[in-house]
Amino acid sequence: MSAPNIVFIFSDQQRWDTVGCYGQELDITPNLDHMAEEGVRFEYAFTCQPVCGPARACLQTGKYATEVGCHTNHRMLPLKEKTIAHYLSENGYEVGYIGKWHLASYGPRGGKNDFRTRPVPPERRGGYKDFWLASDVLEFTSHSYDGHMFDGNMNKREFPPGRYRVDVLTDWVLEYLRTRSDKKPFFLFVSYIEPHHQNDHGHYEGPHGSKERFKEFKVPGDLVGTDGDWREEFPDYLGCVNSLDQNLGRIRDELNQLGIADNTLVIYTSDHGSHFRTRNSEYKRSCHDGCIRIPMIAYGPGFTGGKVISNLVSLIDLPPTILKAGGVEPPSYMRGKALQELLEGEVKDWPQEVFLQISESQCGRAIRTKKWKYSVRAPEKGGSDPSSEIYVEDFLYDLEADPHERNNLVESEDHIEVRQRLSEILKYRMVQAGEKEPVIIPKK
Image (cartoon, rainbow, N blue to C red; front, side, top):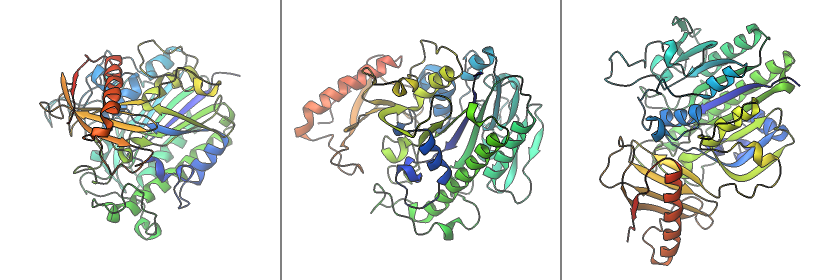
């Protein structure tokens, strides 16, 4: 069989438990659920950085955000960085990008290097040279029912009037699939902004009618009894997810119509989740599962059979996974491990934890195992600082006894040995990520 096509579908700020096969009780994701039944679902999937731009830097390069200097939003992916698009292009792939980029801008707002509302020049597109239809920060060039993006020639392309944003992006995905040359295999990265809130409106915006359609939702356990804004916002959030699912169905139907579905790997995941202002003053930038746990489902060559993988996996594992699927040996500097290893039988050396860098709200680090969540923050650093020599313990949760993370054990004298052990693991993972080994000060 020829090299597989790869379609990577990336949502923004989507919790894992919005999807039926992850426990959502409303029937809003039939297409994702069907894809999981046919393909592979990763039960415990997590971001490696719960902020939009940094997560994207990790995904494009296979490195942690601090390694490429993109540890906060509004930082340009360095031109010297080699991305998954570069590698696949060198291996004979046509590479294309549609949607939100968020890796082109830096410096003063409105300055010459601010592309939030301007077309991204070719050299800042991370190697996606064959097809481009995107905005650097899509929430600044569009709303749920109006807006524009920019094509490869830097021309503005307006949304059709009255068309929901997810539908518009998918219209353009289908247009690409129908008109591209079939001389090469293709890698298409589709980056939706939903279900991310609309920044300038301060709300989640599902398709019209979402508030009524999805008002009878079951409250996720971590939100029960909390403040935040989930009571007002969750129905629209679910409406966004339902639209994403419908449009995943449109893409998969088109692949079938074109006769290429059997030789196309489709991967669906998100950059991070949302805790709905229950852990800090906004939606992300914390170590809690509502913020860091994401859906991850794949179907296509090598990813079939309705398997459910229970190992902990990270967004950082996807770059080597994509390269391996495209016949490229992942470079040794990539920090993740190809997920294909988990499908080829028992893996003895798979990590027992995922590692997180947290920025903007703090300079923080965390690990999450099946049982424990352990997080530290730098007391003398701010959210824009990449790292610190000194951290202080911040959170410890026993996830088996406390899955909704209500009881912080970081000062518990009964858990001193646990904290010491997790501290050593965290320091080891920080060194693995290219950081200097820090001092971690016990909370008590």
